[in-house]
Amino acid sequence: MTEQENPTVLLVDDEDAIRAGLAAALDRTGFRVLEARDGPEALRLVEERGPDVIVLDILMPEMDGREVCRRLRAAENWTPVIMLTQIAATGEKISSLEEGADDYLNKPFDSYELIARIRALLRRSDVASRTAQMARTLISGRLRLERETQRAWLDEEPVVLSNKAFGVLAHLMSRPNAVVSREQLLDHVWGWEDPTGMRTVDVRIAEIRRKLGDPPGDPEFIETVPGEGYRFIGKVRAG
Amino acid sequence: MSLRWAAALALAGGMLLALLAAFALPAARLQFGFQLAPSVLLLAAALAAAAVLMGLDAWSRRTRVRLEQALAAQAAELEDLRRQFIRRLDHELKNPLTAITVQLDNLGTAPGANSTGIADLRAQVDRLTVLTRGLRRLADLETRALEPERVDPEELLDEVVELLQAPDRVELDVQRRPWTLPPVQGDRELLLLAFRNLVENALNYSQGMVEVRARQAGDRLQVEVIDTGRGIPEADLPHVREELFRASNVHDVPGSGLGLAMADRIIARHGGSLDLRSRSGLGTIATVGLAFAPAQPVDLSDTRPSRPRE
Image 1 (spheres, one colour):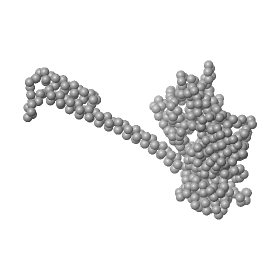
Image 2 (cartoon, chains in turn red, yellow; image 1 turned 120 degrees about the vertical axis):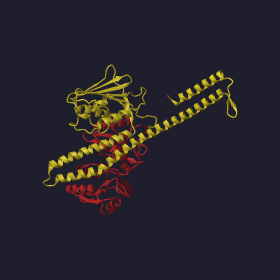
Image 3 (cartoon, chains in turn cyan, brown; image 1 turned 90 degrees about the vertical axis):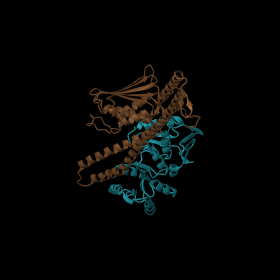
C-alpha cells in the first residue's frame, strides 16, 4: 500500500462524465486517482501502479467488470474492488460477489456514498481470508455451505434455509470475524435499496439461528454485535 | 345461429321434404339421362348442405382457436415488451443520473456555489432516481420467483407499522380472540412491501387515523386498510392499479404512482384479492384477501430436517 493518507483509487468506467465527476470528488477528498475507460487499460494500470482500491463498472465494452475482476483474482491480486452495478436484481449481486468483488454500489449513487465505501474497504484491509470470499464451499466446524447450489449441512444433515437466510449466512461466513451491519446485509443480500427494514434482516438471522440451533446468548456461529451488526465467529476454511 | 344448427336444420328440412316428396309423389321421377326419385335428390341435397355447413363450422372453430391463441401470444408478447422497455429505460437512465448526481455534488462544493439551486436540482434528480428504482422493482417483482414460507399476519403488520414510523396514526386491530390468526403462505418480504404500500397510501392521502383490521374470513385472511381521507374519484378507481397512474385529486401530494401497482401485483401473485372501495371526501377501504397456509404444514422450524432443501 502507498502512503496511508493518500490511497490511490483506480476508477474504471466507460462513461467519461461519470469518471470525470468521480475523479474530481475523490481528488478533493484527498485520494490519488487513476482512470481507465475499459478493462484492458484497467488491468494494465493495476499492474503498473498497484492502486489501493479499484472502482469497477460492470457494463463496459470489450471486457466487462466481472471479467476484469475474475482475471485479477485468478492472478492472485486481492486489491479491494467495488463494483458499480446497474442491475438491482439480487442474482446479479450474488454472482458478482462470487467473482471476488468486495462491495457493490448500485447506480445511480452519489460521490459521498462511494467515498464512504472506499474508506470502509481500506479500513477492512485485514480481511481475514480472501480465499473464503471466492470459495465454492465454506466449512466451519460441523457447518458446511455449498454456494453454487445454495445448500447447507450441519453435522452432515441437510439444513433447509430460505434463499435470503442462505445469502446472509454465506455473506457472514465468507467474512469471518468481520462485523457486518444490517444495512450492508440488506444491500448485499437483498439488493433493493428501498428501506425494506432492518427487521427483515433480523428475521433471517433468527431463522439461521433456529435452524442451526445456534443460541444468540452463547453462539457457535453468529454473534450479535450490539448497535453494529452481526459477525461470524467460527473459524472458516474453503472446502 | 351457429353453423352446426344450420347444418342440423338443413339436414332435418331436407329429410322432411324428401319424406313429403316420397309420400306425395311416389311415382314421380326426374330425368337426368337416368331416372331419379325427387325424394332421393332432396335427401342427397340435404346431406350435401349439412356436410358443407359442418365443414364450414369446423373451419370457423379452428380459425377462432387459432385467433385466440394468436391474441394470447400477442398479449404475452406485449407484456414482455413492456417489461423489457421498463428495464431498458431504467438501464439507460442510470448512467446519466449517476453522472448528474456526481457532478452536482462537485458543483455544490465549488466556492460561491448557488447552493439552493443545486439543492433543488438534487431533489429533482433524486425524484427520478426513486422513480427508476420503483419501475425496476415493479418489473422485477412481476417475474422473480416467490419464496413462500409461513408468515404470521400479526407480526407482519406490526412490522409494517414500525417501518412507517407513524404509530400514533395507525390503529392496528388484529384478531386474537377466540383464537389468533393462522399463518398465511407467502413471500414475507413481498407481502411486507404490499401492506406497507397500502398503509402508506392511507397515511399519505388522509389526515386522520388509519385503521388496519385483520380478521379470519372463512378460510382466508382478510385485512382492511381504512382511511378517512380524500377518497379516490369514481372515474379513477378502475385505473389506480396501473403503474404511474395517479388519481386526479392527489397531485398536491408527492408520490410515484407505483405503490398501489406493486401491492396489486404482489397480491395477485399470491393468488389473493385486493378490493378498493372509496367515497370521495369520506375515505377509502382497501381489502386484501389471502389464503391461509395449509393446515398440515411442512415444518420449517425443524433444526435438523431429514430431507434436503427444496
